[in-house]
Image (cartoon, rainbow, N blue to C red; front, side, top):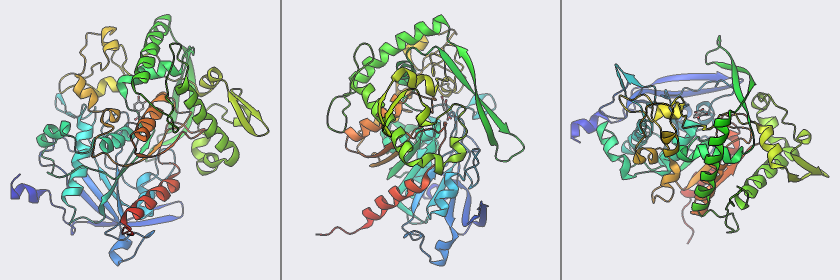
Length: 495
Ligand code: DHB
């Protein structure tokens, strides 16, 4: 990279606008640095970064103990369904909550809001954002922050990624695969800054990841459930941003062919799970027998019971996220769940089948690698000139369309699990996936959290009770966790 090219990637602190945003009774005032170029050779207009800084820092003030130099940098991506994710602004999200960008600025974090390509990014007749473009862009934006370490506000030692669903997967992936050479040719191609893309922590809401094992995990979890409760979202389109008014289910029945497929996939999951060598917190192996039962299933039951018990005791999520809590169409009142045996206020047992019926499967088999190539994941695995491809050998072999199979290295490059153990991965992980979020099997976040814990990472993992597929909730708890980690790391060592 020449000096002239380097200069094109420099952050200029003088180009900004001061903005305010008031939501409910809280007002934030921030400096917005808009449309920063995080790479030299963008292929889509979305590849720009906005940086938002609480204005109080420029008056020399501190916020929650942070200064303009020490504030963590919250890298928030908006990818959803693996589509292009525009740069976020502080505002209400469609669940009528203040989004993570607003909450982070209010809390004194600096927000880096990259726009990133996705499966629907297009240039004339060619697709420009298929896998791995979305993670390449996120990494390039993180590199921009490190590259401009001495020019931007905030601490590049404390970069924290955040996203929800596909965005949560990308948050996890950026954190797990930091500085991995697999991405170098792609980063080079878009002229990303030559710098590290390491991050300190990842905040991941319902990360829809490990896609090549997500089909089998879904069938393992929903074994015996033949009803698919498709989710219908009812939006108020007169609102900007969109407002989600209500959700309902439309029930359908799986065909005998789908049930046959389900059984084959379930067997695959058992083999995969046992190959991982997972252990619980006491070092006991987490495995499954040939019927799909065993300590791994018991572990998930424990997570579910403990989550339901916490909610029964504290009503934490019901109180802190009432707008989300009320969106689920089914009755989530814990005392009225026929899957739990409750004695003297304690949940002492859980019937797995009644449980999985109550949370409602909402995808047909296969849930991700669709045989007719019509899932968003098929679309994500397309190429510049192929709209959609398979990404599992199973669906490719059983395809109902003339089709191609994505290369293994491409499938790996979008899976954070593939990179766990990478020497430069983030040390700290905040992972949330609601029990009632059936966009993927609960096995998928449990595998991610367990593998990370088993490899010695610091993991804060919960499966909240009673929330739909969503993110950016309970952020005060997240900030308390993240602040402590950032502040602890800044303490001088006591000898
Ligand atoms: C998302 C949801 C899905 O059901 C899925 O398969 C992939 C992504 C999302 O909300 O981003």
